[in-house]
Structures are given as C-alpha cells and as structure tokens.
Amino acid sequence: MYKNVIVKKPGKSYVNGLTTSDLGKPDYGRLLEQHVAYVEALKACGVEVTQLPESEEFPDSTFVEDAAVVTPEFAIITNPGAESRNGEKEEIEVVLKQFYSKFHYINSPGTLDGGDVLQVDKHFYIGISERTNRDGAEQFKNIAETEGYTATIVELQEFFHLKTGIAYLGNNTIAAAGEFLNHPDFDTYEKVEIPDTDEYSANCIKVNDHVIIPKGFDETKRKLAERGLKTIELEMSEFQKHDGGLSCLSLRF
Ligand code: CIR
Image (cartoon, rainbow, N blue to C red):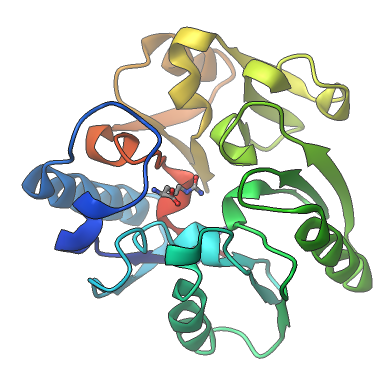
C-alpha cells in the first residue's frame, strides 16, 4: 500500500516545455484543472499528498517521476537525460530528505529518467531510451542489487520512456502496449493488452485499490473491470500534449 505521494504544481512556463507531439499548445487554465483533479484522485486512493509549488525555471518539472525513483527503503536521485530538466533533481532531493535517510545517485556520464524504471515488487525493469543511457541503466542495476533487488535492462525500440507503454497492476499482471505486447522480458505476466489506438492508456497507475487511467479509453476500462480492478478516469489532454502521462506526475511510496 502507498502512504505518500509527491506532486508538483505546473508553472506557467509548462507551455514552453519539451514535447515531441503535434497535439498543439497546452491551455494553462485547463492544465491546472487537470492537475487539481489528479491530486483529488490520489487522495481518493487513500494517500497523503505533498504538493510542491511550481518552479518557472523548470518548465517540465511537474513530471516529478523523472528526477527520482522511490522504494519503501531508499530513494535514488536520477540524472535526467534532458539538459533543460537535469536541475530538477536538486529540488526533489531536498523534499525527499523529509521522508528518506538513505539515498543513492546516478552520476554522469550516466543518465536516467525515472520514467524508464518500472518496479514489480523486488524487481526493476530499466529502459534504455533517448533519456536513459546504458551507463545510467547499469548504475541503477548495481544500486538495486546492492539493496537486495534484481533488475533487467530493456532496450526500447519506439517508446519515449519505458512506462509510456507498460504498467504493473499487481497480481502478476501488466498493462502492455506496442513493443511490450510480445516482448520476451515480460512473457511471464498476465497481460491487459492495449491496442495501438489506445496506447496512451498503457501509462496508468495502480494506487492502492484503484487504477487511475486517462479518460476516453473505454476498452481499457472494460478490460480492467473484467479483472476486478476499480478505475478512476482523468482527463489528461494538456499533459499528453507534452508527452506526459499519469505516472510521470507523481512519486508514490
Ligand atoms: C519531457 O519531455 O521530459 C516532458 N515533456 C515529459 C516527461 C514525461 N515523463 C515521463 O514519461 N516519465
């Protein structure tokens, strides 16, 4: 069960942040409404939410997941692969000091974004992507192993981040899209298969007794319900415009 979640209010500079999508410019008012709804949904899942104020200096910093990876026992401060985002790790470390005494760090030339790390109980999957290089992934694997975890490094073919296309739903079950549908590293899991048309909904988050999914993906909702999973749907349009999904917006522990 998760007890705590850290989120960060998006600043006005968000609209000038990084994106690869052609979905248009985010509307700041709508973005804030969607962020408020996200925080409310988390609270409904029974967690304590720590909300950090916006920082205009870092347009993408509402995507807190990329600057750290948190476990029940320790935190890993990452080394985000996009230059404009790298400084986000300093603020996240300060905040995490309220919750953790044990820290590990990914160091240059290794880079790693938290969006490339999927935790399944005592195992991590680490994606090599545009943002996470092999050095960063190897450093993470070593840290995991010194802490009694195991880890698999996965080379991404298409996805932006590992968790863009995969989520762990508990009970040996994953939601998987695109390159993960038939990926040998994930063939021991039960799969909620997400077709290409609904790919965005593969980035969902299980928070205690609920799975939070983006709005507008009825087939994903139905498949989760079939497995007895309760869902909360959230409008995510303004985050999607900047390549962000549900997992990116919080650190959960
Ligand atoms: C970026 O390009 O870094 C942001 N616009 C989106 C980051 C999304 N984070 C994630 O998938 N973990």
